[in-house]
Structures are given as structure tokens and as C-alpha cells.
Length: 197
Image: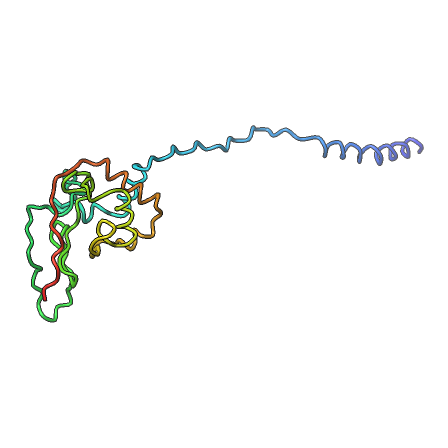
């Protein structure tokens, strides 16, 4: 009988101590934990960021002429081709619901504002954004204010300058930086034509 009492005493004392020691001893996992580090993406240069923004905002849709219904990348972002002469808007029948029209190149647009032509955004020193009229500061002001070269005439539809005005200065500078890296194309784009009176 004493044997059983002695054994019950040992179990009542030793089991809690053993459980406490087990709880305090860290267990070793059967497999090592998987690595959770992810390689950081390389930082973009401003020009690389600008290239992405130009693609996302669809600048080629209007500023690059079309050939076989696709952007002609040999004249990328050079604006309305100087060889396509437009002097008056197309006639719209009385009562027609159509008020905005465009050429097949999508580089000239007509509407109640008159006729507008997509600008040459290449770094050509005579006809593009490298001309003496343009600078990074003038480009930022144009996009923020809707004024040509930042201080001139209104930037007319369909150019969505209001959307660009919401971009940060860093993003606009990135677009400018990218536009300075593309091939220069000599292409004199005409001035807008006011609406007929």
C-alpha cells in the first residue's frame, strides 16, 4: 500500500515539474522556415519612369501618326505630319449628332474649338521640344496650366492636360526626361485653326 501512496506522491509532484520544463524548452521545427526575403526591384531612372507614363497615358495614340491602322513608330511622337495639309474642318450635316472629327492618322482633330494638331514631342532642335521655346520648366507649366509653352495660347482639345496637371512634378519631369531620349524627327506641326465664324 505504501508503495502505491509513494508512487502517487511522485507522480503528483514530478508530472507538473516535467510539464513545466517541457513548456519552457523551445521545440525545434522538423523543417527550417522558408526564406521570406524578396529581391528588391531595381530603381527606375527618371527616363525609364517617363517611358512607362508615356505608354500608360497613350501619348502615341495622338502624337504618332498611323500607318495601316497602327502607330508608325518610325515617326514616334512627332505629331501631325507636315505633309498632310488641312485648312478647314470637314462639313457636318445640319442636325448631325457628330461634333468632333479626326483624320485617319488621329493627329488632327476638329470640333467647336476649331482644328488642333498633335504637337511634335521629339527632341528636334527646330520643330520639337528641344527648340529654344521649350525647357523642362516650360513643359511642367504647360501641363499644369493648360497654356502652350506654359504661358501662351490655350492647349486645345483633345489634349487632356487637365489629367496631366494632377501628376507630381517628379512624374512630369520623368516624362520630359524620356522625351529627351527618343529619336528626333524634323516635323513642323501647324498652329491650331480657329473655328469658322
